[in-house]
Amino acid sequence: MIEKIIFYFLTVMVLVPAVMAVTLKNIFHCALFLVLSLTGVAGLFAMLGADFIFVAQILVYAGGITVLLLFVVLLSGNPKDWIIKQVNVQWFGALAVSAVFVAALSVLFRFLPLSSGLAQAQPTTGLLGLLLIRDMVLPFEAVSLALLSAMVGAIHFSKKE
Amino acid sequence: MPKGPWEVMGPAVPSQTDENIRGRYVNSFKVLAALVIPLLLLTVLVGEDPYQIFLTVFSFCLGVFVWVIDLGVKIANAGVGLLGWRFPAWLSGAHIGGLVHHVVLFLLPFVLILMVVQLLPAVIVWMELKAAAHMQVRLGPMRVGRWHGWAQPFADGIKLFLKEDLVPAKANKWTHFLAPVIVLAPAYICYAPIPFGKTAVVDLDIGLLFVLAVSGLAVVGMLMAGWGSNNKYTVLGGLRAAAQVVSYEIPRVISVLPIVMWAGTMSLSGIMTAQEGLYAGFLPKWFIFYPVVGQISFVIYLITTVAETNRTPFDLAEAEAELVSGFHTEYAGIKFSIFFIAEYAYVFLGCALGALLFLGGGAPLPFMGWIPSYVWFFGKTFFLVFLFIWFRWTFPRIRVDRLMEFCWKFLLPWSLVNIAIAGLLML
Image (cartoon, rainbow over all chains, first blue to last red; front, side):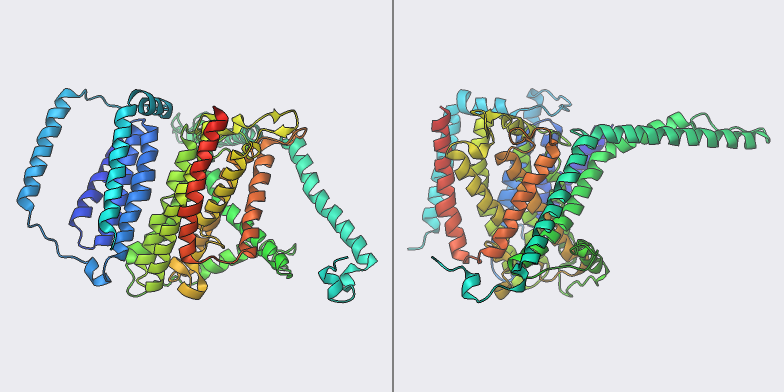
């Protein structure tokens, strides 16, 4: 019972701010609602008993990336620019992408077992560490290399001669 | 023979005459007694587990409560029975008492954390006022509450409560209103996995990472305060604060990694139990005494925590000369004081974490295991709090570009090197 209440609360906390983040006109408010939405996602992870991912979500997304986002919003232009007219020139493309995404998800859900997934928070950090550093070390390093090259590329493009 | 400043400055001031020195000895013994006697009383009367005493007292009170309710119901039933009625069966002492028992035991940890977060800032503010005053050869608050102005922070709190809550006309109302809430709320949450002494409210397996992650959320509140006030100084202050906190978060997290490597766990109570015991029979196994790595980690952790909490050498965010008062310039009354409560709550949190990670938390010094663990924990934490206050009143503020350089070009590389050394030592 209480799990259901928390679950639906978290769902609302993810979805409503997510919609707000794309529909509001004030770009700073959009970024703030994005923080709320990502925190809600962290709450869903916590409900599923994935404690490490829950904390990583808060540390990386809610506390790190969105702060950088807010930072960029504050540094960009003068306050008048913050209230931007909604433009949806590319609504058709967006609709097509969303349709494909929904279709892909529905196919995926048919293959995945739909368990209730409510689990006691069990320590997952050790298992995750072994998985990343021992069993999946090659993909892990490949991903880190890709991220590094992305970072180098970003620095290269943003560097002024 | 070098001359001390007192010799250069002329003859001894009256306070250094014999009688006064005798008076000082008497006073020091008084202070010592004031520290030792409560400690002995605490040890003898309360012991290691105050929760048991609470349970005993609570169950006794509950018994009285149940008895009173049963008596009341009996009398009421006798009265109503004349009319031929009876109260329903669930209105019994045992039933209501059971309910109260559950509710109180459920709410107790939350209330305790609430009290800790609300009361400790007052204690730290008083410490800060007195320490600052004595470092500047003043007395500081002396009157409120008779004894050395101990009630000064409470008086300040009442004053701030009674002040008008000013909101700038062009402020963004909701952002301005919610910013102090979002700065303070993570502080409450972060105290959950911290073991005060031996036991925590919840013993999270990822406790250390949880505290570091959730306390990082306060940055959002700082940016909201800066932007919501609609003032260029607050925006600049918010930006500086956010940049600083986000940058210093990185060496801070990396500097505590050797401890996780050494203890093999991120659970705070696990890290604490790993530090119990002695090296070579006399040196406590606290991480700060771990060769090389412990000391480097501790110094980096201390510096980055001072920077995280935006306190003086690193209080660029509220540099009065440049930015009025940083992101909380446009706040007045209780909202302003919430920012201050949050600052001190984070200071205490950082110090508690430092005491847990580096000074062994509730682990005692050798031959002093008879002192309860929570006394050790609070003693170590307040020692670190005193270090913070000491830094604040002795170091000048550093320049904003040097601040970032110091973080990215000095602290971060050295914390990475520190991990490498730790790996070599633990091989």
